[in-house]
Length: 591
Image 1 (spheres, rainbow, N blue to C red):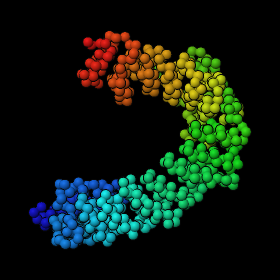
Image 2: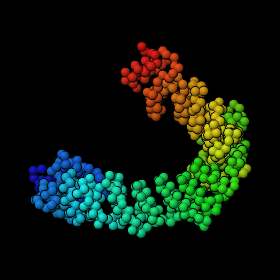
Image 3: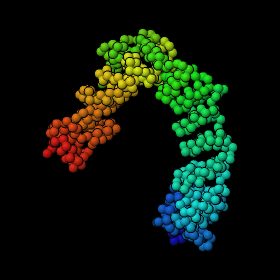
Image 4: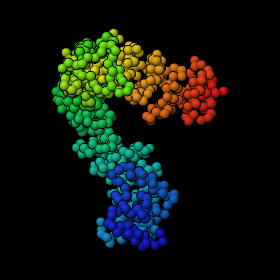
């Protein structure tokens, strides 16, 4: 730039349309260049975003290597030198702005001082701290300098931060202080933040409780629990509503400690109806302290294992054994359960349409009025999202009615809750499997899935009886069946599984078949992986490529098998020439 007036005129031409100040990028492209031109910080940075200040610190130090002329020197910071090129540009642009109105006036000192606070030379940073007292907008950079690696910079910055940080500033700068607090020397700011907020009234922390920054919410709730800023009802509400697991545990346990015999529903109800299992488990445990242990029975069928375990503990404190309750619930299988009651054979899937096929034995009959209808393909009576319990089917549509939160199955109910099925396996014996086998044919997909999981938990898996469930119309049932059959993968017919890798089958069936084939013996895993190398599903194709690259000839595989050579020749794009020769040599082919 040979002529400062030309620069000013160029900037003026950019603003001829009256656009925002941040559009002066034709002359000053980078953040550092714009600050050096006198553009205010609020128009260059997102001052409310903590990462903007740390990024500025990094960018200034990086720009010093290729544009040192943009940064103010020590003499300018100390007031011992005349105007620099940057200040001349800023003055010219500022004069042009003032002619257009004071609202567009350019600051010449604040932006340059911000650059000085981020200067790679520690002497410049230290000198800039003295002048920074006059500019409250630079307080975020004081927070950054309070964690500086140079002690002559760090200590004055900490003193300045201690004097300037009041409650309002602490709340506004909490995200940045906690972000900088992750650095080696950032603990001072975190401690100072805690000291300031502890002296503040508890209601002032409200903005921090609802902050979008998870770290800020955690810090605020820890402080509130330690100082007693939140009432038990507020703690219960936070445990139930916050999406962060750490805050859920912290507030739920803090609320649990306050529970006594006279606790009200304002504390228990948010916990017991919470979506997250951490809060619900604390709520169930609190029922005993509140003298309402009998209410824990309805949580024996909760969708969460930890909630069911807490409910069993509370119920046992009353002298009630939950196992007979589980047995009674699972034995009340109504006439709407299609399939063979003795064998538990469920319907299979038609590969062409993906719809349910009637079983060969124990065929399903057309439901009478008032009974459940067979679900359509891929559908069924799903559990309620809030409770995970089975919904009773409507007689007109076959859809499900939603029970209240924590409501267990009633005596005489024909639809056992999925939690009751898995609960039986969690506290039952292997002999209780006789109650789970018939549930493999139940029309509610969640019940069938929990029945398979229960049989796996009781270690009574029968590969022959569970294999038809790999073609179940419900994805959750197929996933559980695949997991249960994994230890018996080598006993399953590989041709039958290979057929289910075809594209005409639903994706969840193909995934389960591929996992079982990958756990097979000999050449079976390689054969299955090569079959999917050109599959249109990118995830299946990626898993197949990884399986091929991991495959090595196992012990017992006959040496010189021509099928191995043929399969490896179809995978040349996955290996280097050396690795491919090595793999063939291991298999005794291609020599």
